[in-house]
Length: 218
Image (cartoon, rainbow, N blue to C red):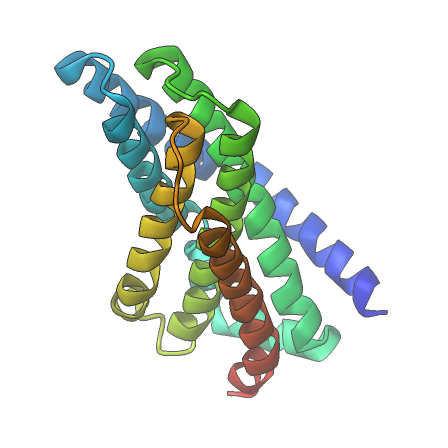
C-alpha cells in the first residue's frame, strides 16, 4: 500500500514540476550563465579549480531546486496529505524525487562544464559515480532540512543555519573523491571517504523516515 502511495506522490511531484517549468529552467539558466561567466572571465580553469567550481554550483543548485520541496507546501495541503497518505510514504516520495531531480541536474551541469570549461576528467565513469553519490548526499540532507524548516513557520533561514555545518564536510569529501577521477594520482583513504559518505547518506535517510512522522503530527 505504501509503495503505491510513494509512486503516486512521485508522479504528483513530477506533474507539479512540469507545470512550473520556470523553476527547472531557471536552475538550468543559473548553471549555464554561471559556467559561461567563468569561461569569459577565466577561460578553461585548471583541474582543481574546475572540480571546486562544479561542486559549489551543485550546492547552490540543490538549494534552489531541492530545498523548496517542503517550503512550497501550504499548511492546508499538509492537512489533506495527512488524511490520505502515511508519513513515511510522503517523506520517501520527497527523498526519491529530489534525488532523481538532483541527479538529472548534475548530469546536465556536467555536460555544460564539458562544453564550456573543458574536460579534465581522466576517469569519466568514476566521476559520474561520485556525482551520483553527491546528488544523493546533497538532496537527502536538504530535503530533511526543508522538512524541519517547513514546520518552523516556513523559516528558510533555519535550513541555512542547520545545513552549513553538515554540508561543508560533505563538499570537502566530494571534492577529494572527485580528485581521483580528475587527476590519476594515489588518494590515500579514498575508499574510506566513499564509505563514510555512503553511511552519511544512509543515516540521513533513516533519520528522515524515523523523525518525519513526529514532525508530521505537529
